[in-house]
Every structure is written in C-alpha cells, then in structure tokens.
Amino acid sequence: MATTGTSSTPSATSTTPRTVLITGTSSGIGLAAAVGAARAGWRTIATLRDTGRADALRKAAAEAGVELDIRRLDVVDEDSAAAAVEGVIADYGRLDAVVNNAGAGHVGTLENETVADVRKVMEVNFFGVLNVSKAAMPHLRASGGRLITVTSVGGVVGQPFNEAYCAAKFAVEGYMESLAPVARALGVSVCVVEPGAVASEFVNNLGIDLEEYIAAAGPYSDALRNYVNRTVPQFLPGAQTPAEAAEPILDALTADRPAFRIQTSEWARGFTGTKLRDLDGSAVQALTTDWIS
Image 1 (cartoon, one colour):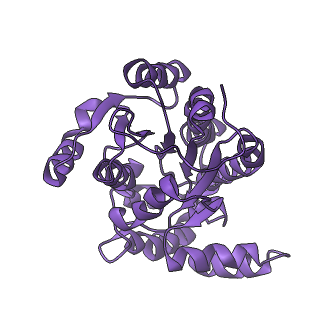
Image 2 (image 1 turned 30 degrees about the horizontal axis):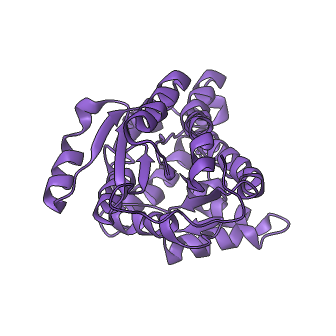
C-alpha cells in the first residue's frame, strides 16, 4: 500500500537497510554518488549500460571499503529499466530511492545536425529518465521514497551550441517540477540536482574531435571556436570534483524535506539565479552572447 503524508525516507534497520538505485555510475558524479551512498549505509545498486566499464567503480568501492551491487541498466531501453527495478525488488524487497544520473553531453547547432541527432539526445537525457522513473514509482510509493534526478545548470539556462542538450534537460526539469506535487501527495519526494562544470570525463565522452568539428562547422566555426575555448577549461582540474557535486545528492537522500531544485555549488546557484530572476530574458542573452563573440 502506498504511504501518504510524509516526505521522509523510512528508517533503516539491521534487516531492512534502505535501498537506492543509481544510474550512470561508470564515472563522474554517478560513481561518486554510488560510493558515497554505500559509505552512508545505503544498500546501493550501481547501474551502468556496459558493465564491462565498471573497473573504476569497483576500484573506488574497494578503496572506500564498501560493497556495491553492480548491475546493467540501459536507460533508453524501457524493458531494461523495468527489469533492473524488478530485479532489485525480487532480491531485496524494497526500493527507497532512485538517482537518475545517466546522461550524455552533446555539442551542435540546428543547421549543422539532423533532427535524428536531437532525438538521440532526448532519448538518453529525457526519455531515459522517464523509463527508470516510471518503473520505480510504484515501489517508491510503497516505501515513501525519493526520486532524485541529476539535471544541469543547462536545464535552467539555455547555452550556445547546446540546443539539444539543454532542451532535454529543460524537459526533465519541467516534467519533474510538474510531477513533484502529484508524487508528494502519495508520499514520494521528487527533486532535481543541478551541477555546473565538473572535473570529469564529460568533455571526452562527447565522442567527437572538437578541432575537426569546428573546422566542419562552416559559417558557425568562429562562434563555435570561441564557445569551445571558453567552455572546455571549465571542466578541467580546478572545477568542482565529482565527489563535491555528489554531496547534495547524498543530502537529498536523507533530508526531511529536500528542496525541489538543488544546485551543487555557489557558482551554479549564481548562474541559475541569473535566469530565474530574468523575466524578459535580456540578462541571459547578454551573458551567453558574450560566450561566442
């Protein structure tokens, strides 16, 4: 039976520890969140599309002295998401939280990419979130649990050459913002976590040669080069670490009443605040225009 009237997670006991499923744990924020949750006493199901890429995850868990249950979950495959969730229920009997972290970066602009390219971005970053969330919701209702989704400051502020990526993250934020009061009425807390630049493999995982991409961008080449020169250094060492970005996720797992929208750094709070105060859009347009000029 679904629980109602509470937004707190159930207390763990020696026989029924709290169980969290986290997607996209091969590296970065997902890996740090999985290790951090296990360290905090959660039974942690760390999922990734290709379990052959779990070496870094296993190493981090071993170094932290924690155990992870590593499983395959391809978020774009509805059947894979459903099977992963049902496997957790079959093995552990409960699911107290889900962290939707899996996603993929993308650089491009409308004239230089196909609509099919945009659909692929939406499949991973938006529909993938829905696949996992839909499979999990009945069990989160049963536990009075948490649905936490890692979005991005790009889910609040549209950014040059990130049209498809930001569109997907905007969609996630709009969906979850709309779902939150409905889920809350049935005992499930919903929130989004918005990182800024994180020192991770995000840029490398774009899967493109940036120099070749710039050279092939035609009339957009100069603006794209300016954007890349400004943006890529943001992800280098000196940026927020994955562990730092994961801390607000871990806090949201246990807070009595987590905020709906959570930024992972002061920079992210300032950046998203620019948009949320910008009623006519002029402040954001001035800011992002400067990135490509």
